[in-house]
Length: 94
Image (tube, rainbow, N blue to C red; front, side):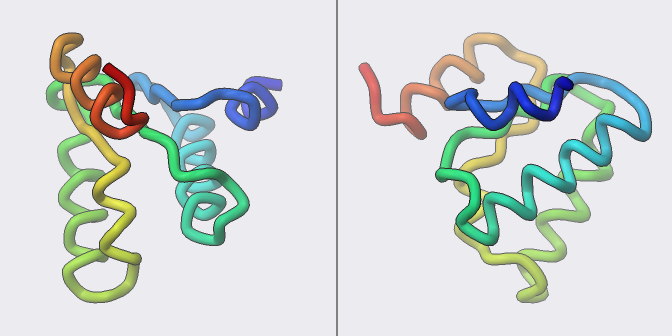
């Protein structure tokens, strides 16, 4: 049921979670890469929890196993002000 809500959102926020959260992240990133999903911001909201995922995605991009443009739509942060600025920049709103 939660996954259906991602399809109507202009942005996705992932919080600390378990296997279901990791599945949702995989589905969303795959849909973004394939163009099934519009290019919208993805926020990984936790200052420490997603560090390994961030490193893995950056390595995949550097090695050409993920399109590098995807990095422009990802933010790993626990700071609400940073997130607001990221949304403004990515969605091109004031």
